[in-house]
Amino acid sequence: MKPYRAWFQCVRGCEGRYSLFDVIYHCPTCGGLLEVVHDHEALAQRDAEAWKRLFEQRAHTTEWPYASGVWGKKEWVCPEVDDTSIVSMYEGHTNLFWAERLGQQIDVPDLWVKLCGNSHTGSFKDLGMTVLVSAVRQMIAQGTPIRAVACASTGDTSAALAAYAAAAGLQAIVFLPKDKVSAAQLIQPIANGAMVLSLDTDFDGCMAIVKEVTRDNTIYLANSMNSLRVEGQKTVGIEIVQQFDWEVPDWIIIPVGNLGNISALGKGLLLMRDLGLIDKLPRLVAAQSAQANPFYLSYQTGFESMVTVTAKRTLASAIQIGNPVSYEKAIKVIRQFDGIVEQANEDELADAAARADLTGMYACPHTGVALAVLFKLVERGVIGSQDRVIVVSTAHGLKFTGFKIGYHEGTLEGVEALRRNPPIELPPDAAVVRDTIARELDKRKI
Ligand SMILES: *Cc1c(COP(=O)(O)O)cnc(C)c1O
Ligand SMILES: [Zn+2]
Picture 1 (spheres, helix red, strand yellow):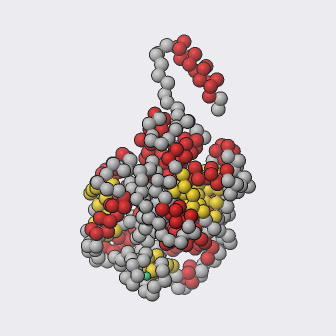
Picture 2 (cartoon, helix red, strand yellow):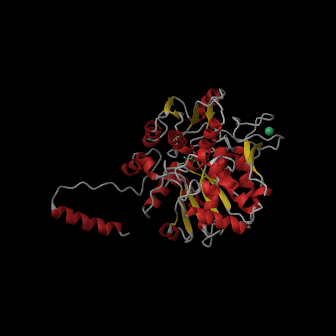
């Protein structure tokens, strides 16, 4: 038996392999991103059916660390980390539910939502952070002098890093753009004991500073140019297929900012195909906010050149990014998956979220972007009523209470809020209450 192995390699194909436990983020030859490459020959020693059985069996245990949705696929993720180094809160295994009523309304009856926000810190970022922090713990165990882990964040990355670092007994340092993250996102790393640095700039500005600071190798960089996170995040696509009893859906729609998550989604699905677990690929849709749409603009030119923008303020604050780090990886994925990039403006994303909420969801603004893009593609006839469609919901709506309040108060800039549902203030008088209910019931007809 060949042992399962993985290493870093340049995405642009330069020579050289680097250990996953080296402090290295870029190709020393060309400066491009690194990606984790697995020994496919070793993985192919087990056939597709046996992998499926193994993954199924682990999903129903509490066995350390395999009960985690990420570590249940350890051989495919980060095979050489010691189980004793792993920092996990049994992330993954999030629910994929049939959005029956919303699907009926848009004539896509086979519509599903993957609720990645039903996770420890309320976003999919947990999937990647468990891998990164586990690798750091192993590096430290091997004697690497790492004093802290750091990231710039639009809110969710820092929440995940702070939680996993605290679980591991490591110091986290997070760089947040001042006044550009939600109250929940700001308080999460504070509660978990991270050093929270609030900088008077945007995400891209924070990113530039954290890159400078982490030139000092004793502070380890946890942003998504660090490809360890992609390895954990790539389990989401595998998990979706697994939840459908290994059937591949027609479409997966995902909101994108730094483009790490869509790269991860594609990577997981390609690995499944290469190992024979599936024989076709879904089409992928990257959904951007029109306020921060460099990938959309670049797609419009057939990816002729990389576009960067200064991201404007958007309700979808976790994707308010103008200079996406995983641009090259994401282009490859869009091409391989016959993908589409589409955008949604503030009114569209808020309306889509409100519409979904009225069918029982509680959509965060980023999920609103993905839903708005779904509605557009259905209207345009690109997505048809026979298609099985998955919308990836990236965060929990409860992290974005300000967005919900603003919508229903009608105070969001650029949003018409046609589905507002403010509370009705009444005197404590049964007759008035009865009349009001009667009037409202006539008006509302569900
Ligand atoms: C991070 C994040 C995204 C975007 O993921 P990228 O990898 O940056 O493209 C989308 N939605 C939410 C809620 C996020 O936290
Ligand atoms: Zn290179």
